[in-house]
Image (tube, rainbow, N blue to C red; front, side):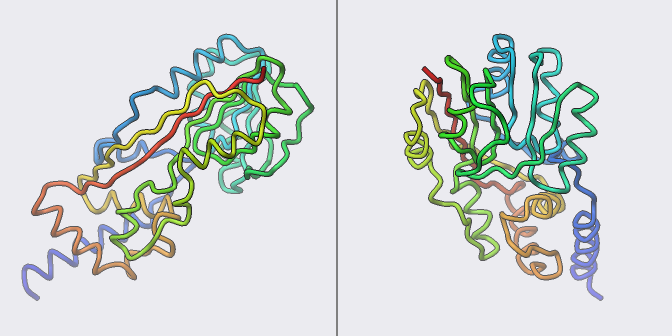
Length: 257
């Protein structure tokens, strides 16, 4: 066995270990020092916090494992609800949020799904990276209520998908598309912004963990199946010092008037 092949085999074993590492909720803190996740110029968290302090009720659509919503526990309105439709995340979210007084509803969000909530029952609806039905959000919002969402542009990480011979399935989902969706409701749009930035990986093992946790980026990803591509990326990393891909986000804020 050559030194080169021994090095590749060692890397392959490490990649397989990362592929098997458990991923809970939607928490990437495990490798916080192994990537650079550039952020938009706006702060979704600051905007949510500001709106929560003015609201008597809030719904978080698609809360994931509840990690993000729990960050606002000091400003929770008296009525705080969340939805989650991904079965593995539901018990995680309930374990995280129910002790904080948050009801977590089993609900799969789509752009035509109807929330199991009464008309005009909420002052604030927030949504970070989950599908939404603006007509139904308008229904559940009180007069003067606010809808605030940060979304992932459908072209997000298209270059990463392409490196593995895959294509993103939602490339149509741009800010223009989202605004057309919003115009199906009578909500008044106050903010509509988009942003392009970088997602930088400092090692291929971290990329493996990411692709395993976010399977829609490269469908049917596995270390065994994609070993050749991973080895190509390893050589690129060793030559350039990092792996850089393009991510895209959008922000929409609207009010019921």
